[in-house]
Length: 304
Ligand code: NAI
Image (cartoon, rainbow, N blue to C red):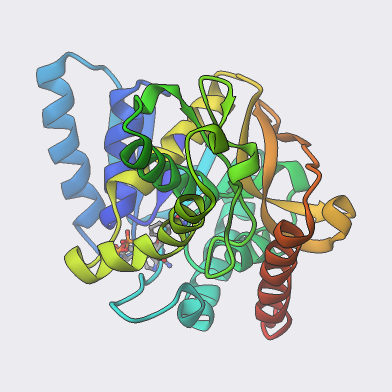
């Protein structure tokens, strides 16, 4: 069973995408708002019925119903309003995520957990510390969404097929994210064969800023984050050993300890099966380290 805690805009869209891909036979939507997860589950089930998909989607307000979950996604909490940064949500969402992580530990101790609530890296750390799960069993989704945005800008700038683009973003899922031009390519050819320096810098800046633009226009980002989580769930459920950037616990990797932040990792049935260490140049390292400092400052102010 795959449980999604938080049946709002992102959680419900994720349930739909996970069910459409038949990643499990059971998907559970949980929320504190009475009726919301049940209504979402009904609406999604009607769609699945017409498509002939037998995945069962249920809605509940009872945390006990998550018993036996293989994967739990935490996407409950408040989202940012236009003009806010993700860090502005820190204290409100930390208390929500703490509460949920306790419930996950009580009810689904063998689950792999994917945190989505913002600010993503600190919330992943809170989940890990409160649930007290093994490091490989807790991760966060932030950079996979950043990757989808970076790919979109690369496709627009080069006019090349989206299918040929391979791109990477690591670091904080926030103001200091690090789109890695040097580790991005089109059909295996380094991206810089297709772009000049100025354009590449522009794409990196655009990738850092575009979420705020979407939020200013429509109030939230929904489909792309739901898709990014679905991709991670697919890699875990099918034991694909797929390398993708996730917020993972670092214990010395990237010269960093006791923090969760975005790094490339091998995802498979055991969750984060390996962290891939990249060589970063001075400028990349500066951005990565700024992200580490920002996340460290955030978690040092929380009582966990
Ligand atoms: P939303 O407001 O539509 O949904 C949040 C849901 O969480 C609400 O239905 C609310 O009732 C529920 N909730 C609150 N406390 C709860 C609790 N203790 N137990 C169960 N449910 C609870 O918000 P939306 O747009 O779905 O975003 C959710 C979170 O995901 C936000 O923090 C947002 O910033 C974050 N997010 C993260 C992304 C990422 O890349 N990591 C991308 C997009 C959103």
